[in-house]
Image: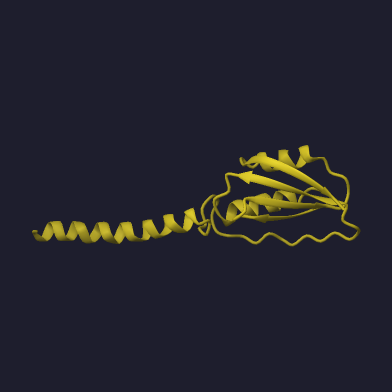
Length: 123
């Protein structure tokens, strides 16, 4: 192998190793893809008695940013507090005043994710 081939191999290694590492993190849902750096979702608390919750199955989440985006938009609904689990691909949407599941679906699908199932649990 001549020196120019060695230089090319070294350059490829320097480029591919970080790329593969990032791809692995992304596939495990740990990367900062889909919209930039991680941002924290403000915690939302509602006084009053919880009336029930929806368990929403969601497809299309890849990373922490996807999770945060869904959670932030769901929490904008009046009387709703949500918690999204990236690993389970689910959102638990607790409601403290009546909210139609169509609203929940529209908010999530409005962010380009797919709702595959919604289960309602009343308290």
